[in-house]
Amino acid sequence: MRIKKLNIGILLFVLVGVVPFAAAFIYALLYSFGIIGVANDGFTLQFWESVITSGTFFKSFGYSFLIALVAVAISVGGALWITLKFRQQLETRFMSFIIYLPLAVPGIVTGFFTFQLFSKGGFFARISHKLGFITEASQFPDLVNDGLAIGIIFSFLTMITPFFVLLFLNVYKNERVEELSILAQSLGANANQISRRVFLPILLKKTWVLIVLYFIFLLGAYEVPLILGQESPQMLSVLIIQEIKQYDLDKISEGYVVAVLYTLIVSVAAILLFLPKRKRAYAT
Amino acid sequence: MFLEVQHIVKSFGDEKVVKDLNFSLSAKHTLSILGKSGCGKTTMLKTIGGLVPPDSGKILLNGEDITETKPEKRSIVYLYQEDLLFPHLNAFENIAFGLRLKKIPEGLIKEKVEHMLHSLELEGQADKMPTQLSGGQRQRVSFGRAISTNPSLLLLDEPFGSLDTGTRKRMQELFKKLTEEFDITSLFVTHDLKEAVLMGNQIGFMQDGVLKVYEDKKDFIQDPQTGVQSEIEFWGGLL
Image 1 (cartoon, rainbow over the protein chains, first blue to last red):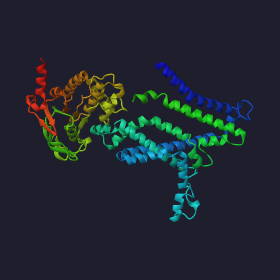
Image 2: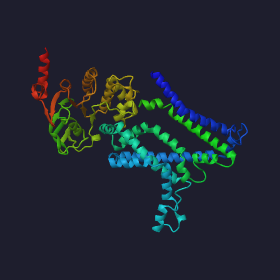
Image 3: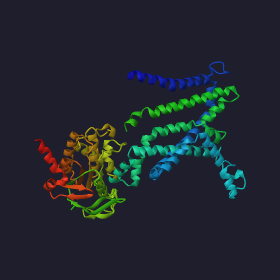
Image 4: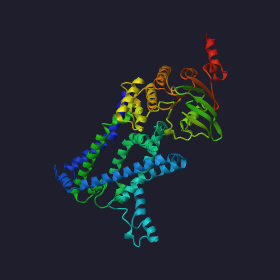
């Protein structure tokens, strides 16, 4: 009976989780080699050559990687600091409501708000003008659609920092970090040593899988970079959609090449990161 | 006297949890403190350990007033009721935790921890994570971690409360052995009558925030408040 239930579970997982993904991947793979597609007429490496030699993909991947890395690093660091310093205040009903609130805001809305606040015709530009800091809109610094991706990173931070704060607060409670800190103090640790030897290692060791998953999620984010990103280089998802929707039919196949490459890199990275350490992560 | 506690009072809000705590303890001795849940035992231990500040009173350790000293500077280790190990460290690193804080050379840390593992009968368990150890093993690692720093005073808050009878008996024997081997001075809080008699050189009884320390074990046994007499009557009645 139990084996039967297990088999049904596996079957459902394969049907819902594996088959659609595998089908979409195979479709993209065939498209990228010109085997299927309206304007394609058989197997060719032309689209792969074009994408690899143009360097657009690698530039876009590197750009996305850096943005995701900076956003995750700042938000994890910020959330750890908030958890360490304001834990007791965050446990009040009002504050826990406030911290949950940003999680309910969709990415596209966050992107739109950021644009409204930081664009050259936005809220802060107008205030700066009123206060006499700038005399015309062009003097306001580029904070959206800019090369340093400040707008994108800001939006990502507002989206994921509350999540990490909640995650760390939960782990802090479940892992009894409070008692362990008192114990460490009793063994001779000062506040700094408690942070470095107890607080940080416990919280990061318990949450690193989610941190990496969030990094992968940001790497493939679409709405926020679509609203706040620059023309070139673009973040990966924006580049892929743009290529696939072009009038030039060859570009559609190149878009699928980018999608396949991205999927392969992320999948290989995820396998390398998670498989060897899975046993250890659960043992602790 | 090695430890002198003078007129310690501690309240939480309107509730006076520890009332005029007065006692002293010689070096290398264990004072067992018996008392029901909520009588103020844990607050008393935490106050002595510096984890809870007293409202008034004085604590002297080896002649030095430590009432205002930070917990990490007191050389007093407080041991929780549960086997609270650092979940990210293996048994070896848990025991080495306090030693690493003191920045002792690596070779000496290895030597001390291996000796401790041997004393605790934990050879071969050094690399195991807390989740891979049994309750008794975890409690032994917890002891080892506290003793390895060579504290002046060990505060044990019902350390065997969560163990089964057999493991508890073995741990009591091990603790007796360790106190002799490492010259430990300790306060041993328990709510088990037999354990209090077995573990302490002196015995105290705490009720409603007041601690009474007995001159000798006979006084403790004869005091009807401690419950020893009713225990004797109960077991005698079965014969």
